[in-house]
Image (cartoon, rainbow, N blue to C red; front, side, top):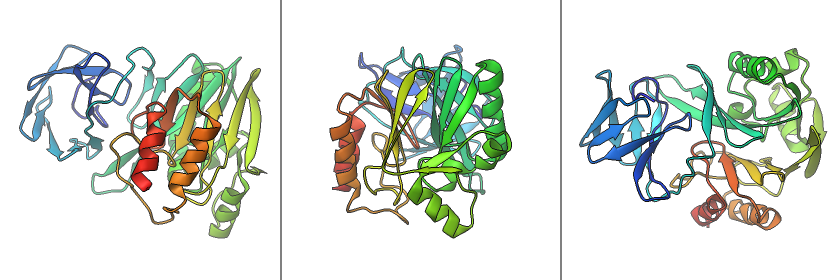
Length: 308
């Protein structure tokens, strides 16, 4: 990783051996030694107060726990977070789409929502792959990037995409749904999600389900649950029991995050809903969140505390 226009976010954390590292959006790590950041490719960046000087001479600026990068993307600063270096690796990257391999069967896709004025927000989704089949949770943010993801899954992994499942009705979860439909990929959603999209006159998933839904990828089960309101009235989570990996979507917050967009949230119910998630899936080892960095079961505790 070069800390220049290539970075979409950098997060300062402490890894399992106590060293300060920079976790890049592609899953690679840079190490911090005083005011010098050593990148995976051997280049150096330097920290000068609230300014990071990148190898190409561009600057990123630090504002509290937010880093603003040269391309307008924002990064968040964290400390004392355990990172397992062996679990994630970048497998594909372009200007609009990053794909990380999280485990043998699970991938994370990262796309970007452009608000204009040089402001972009990274948005995560999850892919489960098994026996040349794939299920995608949340589309990339637009149709063009969704086409890129579909091409990668079908051409590079030789997978048939058997389903796409948005985790709620906001654009960062289904902005590319039309492209999946155009390519004949079946879409599922919680019935409340479909209802809201119908009321809004938006593109709707084709098949609905109630509070619990199960499907198979290859010969392995995947569980999808609505356990209560929180970020939205319809936020669902997905769980892959073979590897105890969860996609928490926007219901679950990354470590150190604020409350975020509460315009359509049910703040009173949010902690109760996450308690139900923890009660139902106490064995979870890895949680991919809607925005920001993945973590373990501690993210459930963090989200509960944040909204109590």
